[in-house]
Image 1 (cartoon, rainbow, N blue to C red):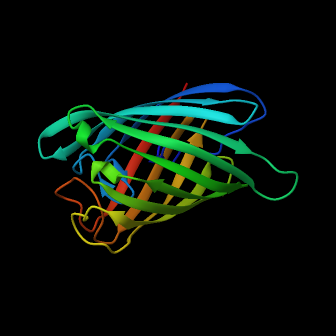
Image 2: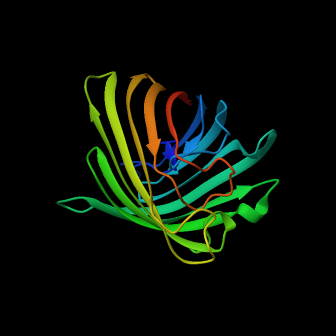
Length: 227
């Protein structure tokens, strides 16, 4: 997801390093915004992430956090992913995988996605398909482009553009138009710690269970530490 590795973002990052490794991370942020929607009801949030990256190209991971679909009703949420990345001799690598989301108190919102993408040095493009986005019965396609540009050994710029579009199934809660979201920011990395400041913007419409799934523009500050 977009928010952790930036998944980020939310959750998915470039995998398939030269050797197998396991990484544990702790992240705190001023707002948990997922694809332009605040899943923490515009409140601070903390999460614990675990990622595994194998030398053969397989990778997997998960994220434990809390969400608030209804005001004042906080609940635990688990996000996970499994994928495979194949590097080529020349040109970008390609990947395929699946993601899953489970909401402990409101499991009717549970959903999964299949994804595929291309990855290069400092950028990636992914397309996700869900047969029932957030348990709504609506089939969706989400496409995103992510990029990062180092400015020095400490500072870097990053950006994200995504579009969510219903493509069939039950009637969405808002409309059938696509919903765009953007995230632009600057990050500072010192050792295994990272501090990020990002501006997040989004258009109206989409398939979300939250009563506040409207146009969202905000500054988000996050701090992450890797073990």
